[in-house]
Image 1 (tube, rainbow, N blue to C red):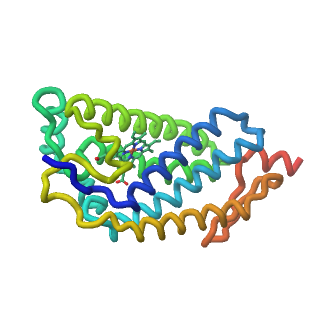
Image 2: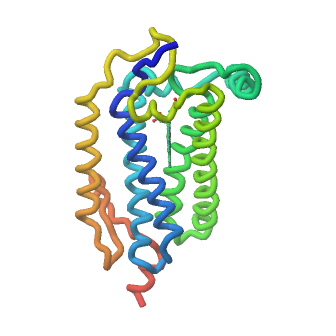
Length: 231
Ligand code: HEM
């Protein structure tokens, strides 16, 4: 086993941008009252996470080897034997996502649009309850993701977390990708930054509205703020 290049720059940039946006949604949701203007940043961070997910969906089709969607799916028998190997023998090594990270990542990818949809439709009673429930599920998935990384690090005596920074992971020598595609990563960073800039340029804190770049649809950032203006 050697350290080989597995994650291209785009994936690493996506990962840390997504992690920051998800952490921000929780910080602004739990750190501020719903009537506080800063609470609106909870929704803005959620919209950014949704855009990042769109980017990731595209990367899943056009990205390098291990970023592609097919690498998220493992046969149930392989997954079972992987989880068993975590307790007993040294865990099976995967060049791309192991069944644990793959499962948590897919759950996170599913929870994000659900949260955005139920967040935008807060006037519906069902959305309010669903939003709170799915937010907890997302927090649990993130927690399990981090726990999985800690378990893996101690079991394998290999700091896997570094792989999402450097791109290099312990894997068979011939399993690496030939390039981290730095230019694609830089272009992607520019696209993400431009999208966020355009989103924030349309953000009106007083009216509690924002326009989605590309769609131009106006989003109301919170039911309570809307009611306040109608009073
Ligand atoms: C809110 C926080 C986080 C979220 C939402 C998150 C989400 C994700 C997602 C979605 C993936 C799959 C990447 C992809 O294929 O696009 C992933 C993989 C990964 N994450 Fe995180 N992550 C978070 C925090 C962290 C932290 C703090 C670390 C390290 C200290 C970390 C290290 C990794 C690594 C190493 C992988 C690749 C694992 C593998 O080899 O399969 N993540 N994460």
